[in-house]
Image (tube, rainbow, N blue to C red; front, side, top):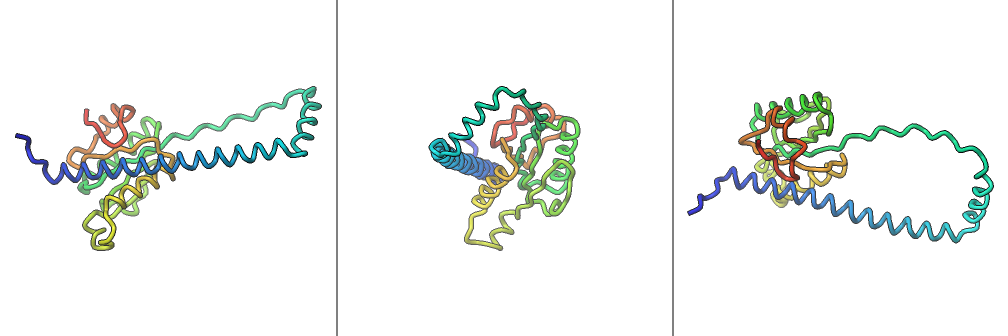
Length: 200
């Protein structure tokens, strides 16, 4: 016989599903925007190639080929990608320890920008250099505020928006029963699969 899942397991599973839904919405939005951009650019290119100024410009470019090439400008340093951490249901000490570990992780190896979604009121309005904090009311508070909207939908929409706003390339759900330490973050953040934090 299989053991019945407890409430914490079900809550964690709901957060993981909502996070994955949010990431999927973000990917779908990016795909649709890319298709629209591709079609618009193709139409503009076809119209441009048929225009008289384009043909004149090509003729002038041919005349300019005999001149020495310009010195290329230095390339901009690419920014690091973001990672959205869904840290829902953590105690105040657990949430503070997670933020401290993420801050230290960024100082040790700044290979990504942490964006943390938390329902811990103690972190509301907190400013942490190198870490973006996004407060989301807990399910009970949200149900009192807006009983007509499911909290999981709110979470999925917020995760999708954060992925778009910060250019996140992955999302991680933090298990509130076992938040990662700095050592675990340093050892496994590069192998994290979207949607879950796998303890080492």
